[in-house]
Image (tube, rainbow, N blue to C red):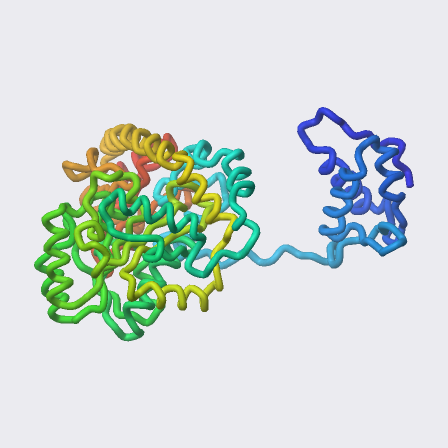
Length: 473
């Protein structure tokens, strides 16, 4: 086999193994190496390329995994063309959902297209996560945790549940590791809570405006979803009392701190009253605390007041630590834990030991705490600058928006301008914005946009808004 012209570059940025893989894959694709041809032995290749046997074996394993070579026991490696390679045709593009719908927005917000400006996403810019997890942290979590090589218990990795229990205890929430169940992100955690607390046909209450994907998930479970109007200081108590009396709901899903989409927080006095209403009308509370770490220990949570008697608290590390980590959790009253674990078992069997061990190590090391402190400071600066810039474009904000903290800005459009038209035009310009109408079960929010404070001073966004709002609807 001709290898005379193949020279590895020892000091290149591309690893030697990858250089070997690319070379052979290219020659097979070009037809220079034909199917059925036998490759030199591993030792012969190592000698001719002046690399270790280990490097050659690693390259051949990857080529075999990609379908370029096949190993025949006792006979060596033979060239083959990856099955169906020439016949593969690009699939038709998926049907595009309108940007104004829940599905359309979510697909855009989770798109891998780097040219899209995620101005309305719930995630932070990619570079804001760069210092969150050091490579050494990943290596240490694997090295120090003997559990990392096995399947974790269905309830979740004990090391992670213990770390979560300690964090809850620091916030005066009386939870042990036995009260905690891990999940694949907050989305699964919220669905588990819904399925434990309610059955198809039951009524559940939600914040209105509130997290739009939760509304759709609850409806998909066959639940009747009724919105409770959200005010600056939290849910409208009169409306909550009236709806509870009328519908006898099984649960109320609410976000106490740094609410999505308004960015506000429920004041303690109102939280106490919510708990009183839950007791009087016998419904449970599911407290979404996904962004609560940005509020720190200063905010007062329902679970803190209630002591996990009538509250199930839900959290996640996807939004603040890394979008690629699907690690969420629930802290629940003891009688509910066994049922939550049983449902999780039927859904996914168990969690990811690798991801849960990594999060446990990030928490244990103190790195997560330092990372969140930096995020808070960065967001505080970003919010002030974003509000000032967006106001110059014609958007309006509530008086306390700058001091609200957190990720979201709840922006009011000029009179006569409606969110769906702005959202569609923004998507055509490569900008992802969330229209306020998506967050309401009552048909409200047509005059609002949800924006991410971290993107609020981006020149593309500001240029688009300035031109669009000057033109009107």
